[in-house]
Amino acid sequence: MKKVIPFAHDLLRETVKPGEIVVDATCGNGHDTAFLSKLVGDKGTVYALDIQQQAIDRTRLLLEQQRIFNVRLLLADHQYVKTYIPATSHGQIGGAIFNLGYLPGSDKQTITTPESTIGAIRALADIMKPGGLIAIVVYYGHQGGQLEKQELLDHLAGLDQKEFSVLQYAFINQQNNPPFLLALQKKG
Ligand code: SAM
Figure 1: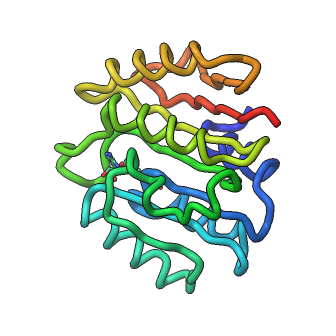
Figure 2: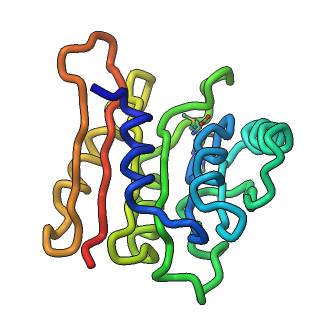
């Protein structure tokens, strides 16, 4: 069975097409940004957001090392993602990914919060193409993580099944709060 992040990438691979616009809502060290960049290719665009300068710097370095040029890096809170994407592209976003929690290798002081995460998911769901998919990798072992996990599950479980399909992918016999995946797909 695939681990959570490879499984999330598989779902995006099945959904996103070359040339599309996609979003990495928590770019961190830039690994998902690089993955999305390759998925959409030269004619596509990745909007990669993070609220910490340290994460933007690390992602920029990774992109330079990999000679990646189709990424717009934004030091910004992801709940305002809509304001950075031109209105002409609203309704055409192919996919998005979140990795919740803190930046690996940081002081763990800055974490994703229920308010901003759910705000960003709402905003992205609104501007997604029909069939577009949002993958959310949920880490919840840190302080504040349980609350975010519960609010997110409550929010996503309450979405209208006529508008969205929502999936949970989780290993239920692992120790120490293993990450799990939530994915929502907009119906066409
Ligand atoms: N996907 C990343 C990678 O491949 O390395 C790891 C992301 S890390 C688990 C979570 C990131 O979310 C941190 O870098 C943190 O700064 C960022 N973050 C927290 N709150 C945010 C917000 N409101 N908007 C955007 N990014 C945020």
